[in-house]
Image (cartoon, rainbow, N blue to C red):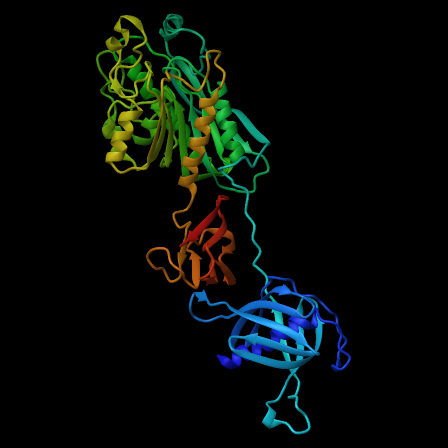
Length: 550
């Protein structure tokens, strides 16, 4: 260790004073020299007897310098030691610990890496005619921090401004009353009265969707969100302002999105509303089968399918994620007045594709029975006003804003977002509930049916929720080999295989080397903060800056 330190000190003298002191005509200079002043506080390193020694200069004057050095060892911590150098009568003197060394320097500097030729003074009893040892060569390289950059926050921030829309893609056909009724400003009773004549006879309908793509996207398989508009299974359209803006917003983040139309309308008698809701579920299932079948055409990653829906669309989205054929409402089966509506997947088209819903954005939706939540591990984020009289936040009859208790005569009780999330917590599912205080139904639009702050709040919270679902579980920094807890280590890694690039940065230490997804570091025990950062770009385009600290 002493020999290594002596050699290091020789190197420090050369660096510090050959680059700063005045020329000494008595010192032999056999090489053409390019004088380069070392950068203050920048680390240099040299290999001595198969060991690495790091050093830097903190103070540099004409005849005086101070700095620090450490020897890279197996310990994750580096113990920095101080040194001082003086020039007195053309003699280079170094002080470190309790030692003083003297030498003369013959050197040539090349670029930022410097080649040194030096001679040590012999011990007094070892010289008679020549008091200097034979010249030796030493190489010091400038230490460079590894490159570091962050990536666009795809799926969390806007990365696309140009969006391509394909309108009226036919995903299926079915018999029904109508698939579009833009009538947001009409009252419920007026809408029902106008629709009675249209429910006298069913007709063949085309089921259509609008699909939104990020233009010039390089990712071939992207997460997909299918949005389902609301309107009490009676009114609404895929091109309502809210659905269009939801699609455009999430597409600008990098998703593929779609807004669908589905069969609307019912005779306001008995269980007809429930049957209308089941038909909406069948159509949504047909739409999803269509998109899964055409995943290559639309660039969809079918392992990352999300749903979003408001009101009746929220009900449909929840049922699509959680209802199974053994949970079909009794009204969907054949009885004296109605035909059998068939299985969930039996309508709309003949496609047989299976799919799994990863998450649901539920906006003031509900389910008839929270037991269906056991059927899937899909996560749910919900938004619901606590003053909603149309779809209750707890378990109650819907449309309680209609006079004469009309809703209880033709509708069943439903359980809104509060009850849904109580059940999800009981099942230990990932969930997030936002109760909108003193807000009624459709709180994302104002009295003039214009989007308001609640709409943007929903976008923001849903963005974070879905982003957490897209981030790989392996997206964390671990010690290598893995150890429990946060602690100092020489090696760390991001234990993922599905990454494209990783860049590392450190506070309170140095990054000694990187290889693939592993990094070697040395920590300084006198630093107030110890943090390691990994900027990772994953195969699916998502990026994250991971942190490790202790």
